[in-house]
Image (cartoon, rainbow, N blue to C red):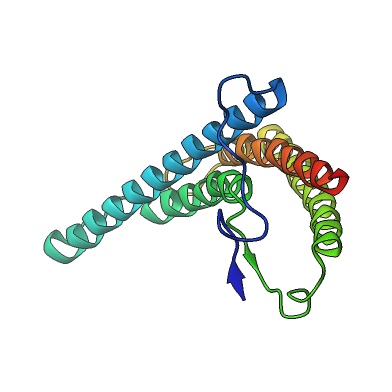
Length: 183
């Protein structure tokens, strides 16, 4: 098992430079946006860790935890996870188990990468679509969390934005894989 990255066989996107094509600029913009989402997800998790520490200390020292800390943790962690996916995929930082494929010829490996990208793009789009459907249903139902009455649809729609970005990044990666096959 190995982690692909800039040194792996499936190197991530090159940064756009002067004279780069519109596609390269779009790819660079999507990668920067994905990085911003990942940073926001990281800050969200740091905030949740801080809140959890404060809640535990409040419970231990004063017998009073932060009300709804479980609800906030649940919602924020779900959103943060979706915020990390686009950058991970844009930089090709996914874990790859290549036990059976490590000895493939470069052309066969490129074909396999393209097939994987097609499947990943379909799955990312399917996830985004289902988040839209689920969020819409939660909005119509008016469902909220138990203690803080936070509307559940807000978490769905926040995750939907990140899933939409993942679908866009997946299309970008697929296009790059198809370009690599033409070479």
